[in-house]
Amino acid sequence: MKRIAVVSILALVVLATANKTRAQSAESSAEKKIEAIFSSVTSPDEPGLAVLVRKNGANVFERGYGVRDLRSKTKIDAWTNFRLASFTKQFTAMAIMLLVRDGKIRYEETLTEIFPDFPAYGKSITIRNLLNHTSDLPDYEDLMVAAEKAKGPLWSPDHQIQDGEVLELLKKEKSLKFALATSWSYSNSGYVILGLIVAKVSGKSYGEALQKGIFAPLKMTHTIVYEKGKNEVANRAFGHTKENNTLKETDQSATSATLGDGGIYSNLEDLAKWDAAITHHALLGEKEMRPALIPVKLADGSDPHWPKEPSDDNLHPGKPVSYGFGWFLDPYQGHQRMWHTGSTMGFRTVIERFFDDKLTIVILCNRTDLDPEKFALQVADAYFFSQQAK
Image (cartoon, rainbow, N blue to C red):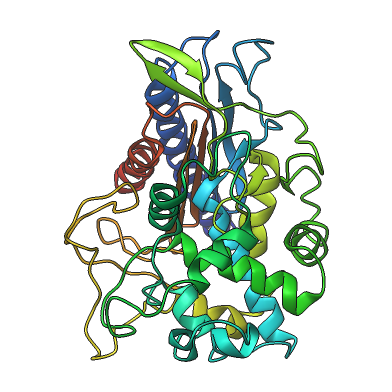
């Protein structure tokens, strides 16, 4: 009997070892595929990208490709800070949710309750509408164009529009184009206003509120809300655009100073901490986080779609869209995910969190001719294929 027991134990050990070896081999194969995806994307002396892949709560791939800028030629690494652009929106949403948790604000609170001098059309627009892009606020860049047609040049990369100016432009509007929550439209204006709400309700600047409520608790020590003339970005990557087949530094635009919609700089190391915090509910409990992960419905109960008219912020014209608070929630090939892209002068970014698969991919680019979303889904495919091969 003892001999049979020993043989059985040995068989189980051999089986477990074989399974572990197969799993390690599959993961190694996935990592080789990932390296192949990025190895020829940029040359060592050109602007490039930083790539992070986390599996089962651990960093399994973390590399930089190319340089932070064409002047210093400093190599991109895990501590290089990139402008996140609209990737910022998930942090703005989190800051609002923390205020709701603390009883300082309600999701159903309206714009006119927070800003009493806001026009009457703000009486029906709630914080929830701002979070899930159903407010139908006009795009502030369109309002900037209209203002400059009437008054001449007002803003430039050297004289950038500020959050308060965005609010004033919106206050000059008299009504919404459509009835509230009857359509879905991605709104940078809404998230600029959310950033202002964070500041007003917390009694701190937007940057100070995020530092105290999010970055410091998570030890995201190199992540900042950048405000020109007030602070500096350490290990900073500068943005670039390809013009006539040549990469040119194009780091700032007239709209680069707004905060809640895209003003954060961060890096792979800090974003790994952000990913872990979401997984382990370090800031909000599971119940408190749940509203962020419920796809919005329109007023009639129907599912929203991207607007039919193409634009820079319209990623998939006319197609269905699933959005919560600061996160897109559309599944990918049957895999549940929460994700967001970022796009601004000189930068492209993405985070893809396949939470059931315990797989997170972050790609930060300091050049606009790369497509980080496409790369991230190629990485996901490599892992999904390796899992099938086990």
